Amino acid sequence: MMHSNLKLIAISLLLAAGLTACDKQGPAEKAGKTMDQTASDTKKNVGESVDKTERKMTEQSAKAGQSINDTEITARVKTAVFGEPGLKTLQIHVDTVKGVVTLTGTVDSQANSDKARTLAAAVADVKEVSNKLVVAPAK
Image 1 (tube, helix red, strand yellow):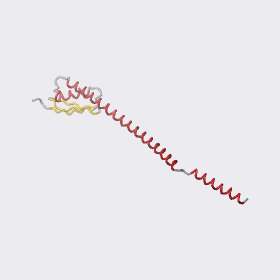
Image 2 (tube, rainbow, N blue to C red):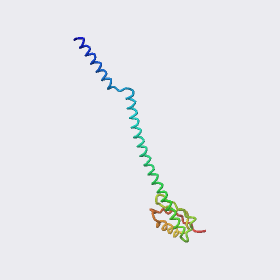
Image 3 (tube, one colour):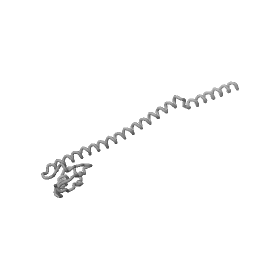
Image 4 (cartoon, rainbow, N blue to C red):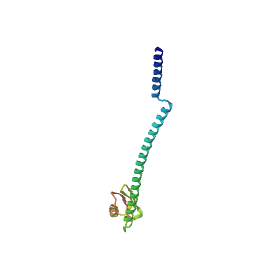
């Protein structure tokens, strides 16, 4: 009976050791967990990159839209100013940034400077006019 009890204890210890070993992770389990974590991290990084790219594209689209709008404003201001009799249009330069029109160059009188400013201000989408025209009497 003592011999049977020893066998029973030995078998029990072996089973307990075997079950304990099952709870420990082997190289395959560790590799699997590492791969799962790497895949999760990659998915997160890709998602963040996509979000960042979408934000940049939206910003660039807004900038492009503003540039097109500024170009349209400049063209409309030039049409208004250049269509006005008496203004020496080749000496007036028009630049637009974010709806702010800047007039530069020379005119022959303060009245023509004021007229160019008024014409520019009347164009749709013009937020402000910076009149930097220099009055230089005709020679």
